[in-house]
Length: 309
Image 1 (cartoon, helix red, strand yellow):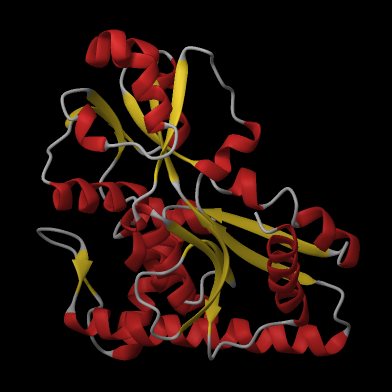
Image 2 (cartoon, one colour):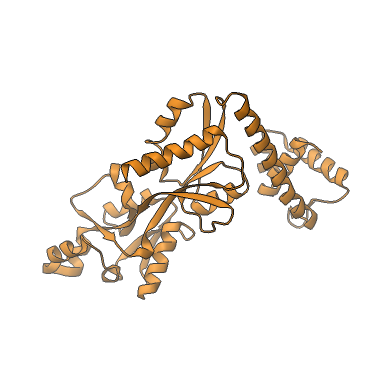
């Protein structure tokens, strides 16, 4: 058994599909299938059930847990050796949420690149839950996203607290409040009352997204059931549709820096503490961090704490 066998096994276990795993590894299906059979013969047990569905056996599940730790240990060993060697070359795997990368990275990466021009940066995008899982499995070095739900084993340094804005086209304001529209606009400019919009169509992120979870918990607390017209995985899609008056959307305030605006749309702050989101840089407590990774973390922290954004 060698590292290649183990990495092949992990890929097949992740995909539960030989074709997809072979594409991911850039090897032929036959070669990958042979490697898995060879590994099973070496261990003297089946790691996968082939019928009726392709899935891990109990032995395979146990093997997967150990395999991930072995590969992570190998990666940490190589990182440490590379770090000791010259502190100049290497790879940093940074997890970042789909949309927050455009806000978090432009002010961090140029500063880091000046200091480490030869360090390769791999960006892995996903929602907070996916990134947290990848961090725990050692597949990425650090995450720039919401504070992880479960902090056990993870160190997080808060960068900024962000609040949500309710994006409301003026036609909804007119339909709801008539000749009191301007008064209500002034009132909601300080803090919006979501209950006032309970009968309007909402454009929301899909369940599982942290913003959606914050919203769902809050409306449940205040006792309303919003009418959901559309669900999407992309914050910018919901925002763009809200600008056209198709419904109401939630938009992080920090995204407003370079966002398109319209005179026909209002942005009302949701000020409840339950809807505030803390953005942090997170990494595993007990995992070896190269000098470059440490400096990347310091660059992010110093920039956001200095600017107070």
